[in-house]
Image (cartoon, rainbow, N blue to C red; front, side, top):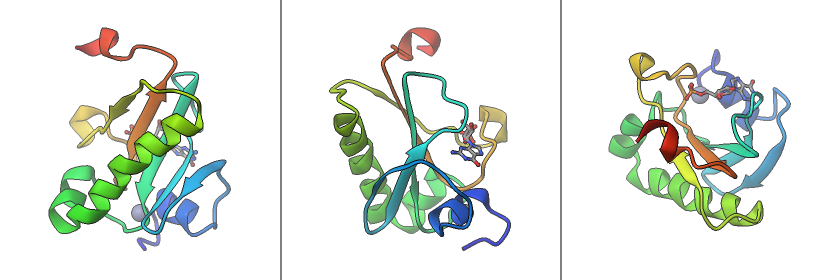
Length: 113
Ligand code: 5GP
Ligand code: ZN
């Protein structure tokens, strides 16, 4: 755990969050500033600064993050959804603990792609 990391603190239960799913290696909770009808963040319990670092250090945990995005979407009653990994400050990342944004109820791809 990184002592100054807000997402490590959420995973440890030291900061409140609306947790919607947990697995051995991940925690999923609602984004505090939702950008879509469903906006959930899936994080590894392990602290890594971004998804690329997580995939390099612990590929099985990165795979579990991906699997949990599907679990969360289904739980929220969505078959179709977007996954966004902002990776690096110039790409808009503001919290440097790896996280998947799970977005459903709006076609995010139309905004960017
Ligand atoms: P990033 O821009 O780093 O990809 O996304 C970070 C996300 O974390 C943002 O969408 C922001 O709203 C969310 N966030 C930041 N701090 C907190 C917090 O303390 N609790 C929750 N639930 N979400 C947070
Ligand atoms: Zn962390």
